[in-house]
Amino acid sequence: MATTKKAAKKTSAKKTSTKKAASKKAPAKKTAAKKSPAKKTSAKKSTRKYSPAAGKQVETEMHEMKRGKLKSGRSGKKVTSRKQAIAIGLSEARKKGAKVPAKKS
Image 1: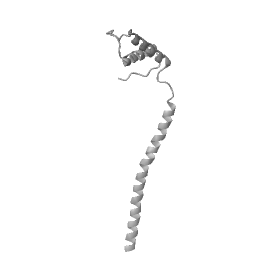
Image 2 (image 1 turned 90 degrees about the horizontal axis):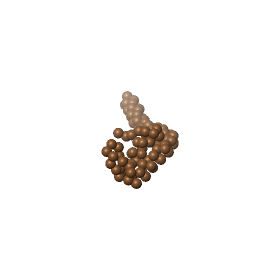
Image 3 (image 1 turned 180 degrees about the vertical axis):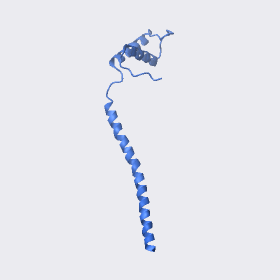
Image 4 (image 1 turned 90 degrees about the vertical axis):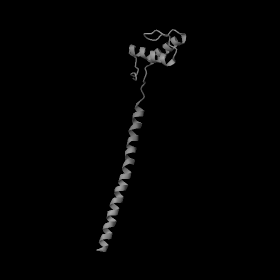
């Protein structure tokens, strides 16, 4: 009887060790699976976000700002900020139907 108890303890010890080893391997497989689709999506993203027409519109608005002729919407105040001039150019490009991403709110 003593020999059978020792044998039973050894087999139960082996079962627990295999469970632990299996649980350690599972997360490693999951992280490897997540990395491969990310590479595929980055390769597909080759299209332009802004159309050439949108870039041209922003360029003209920048020139107006530098000359001091660019005015803001309702208030009609002179625009002095570079970022504001770009925003006005993109807004007007959207109105004309150029390819420009949607505004971030």
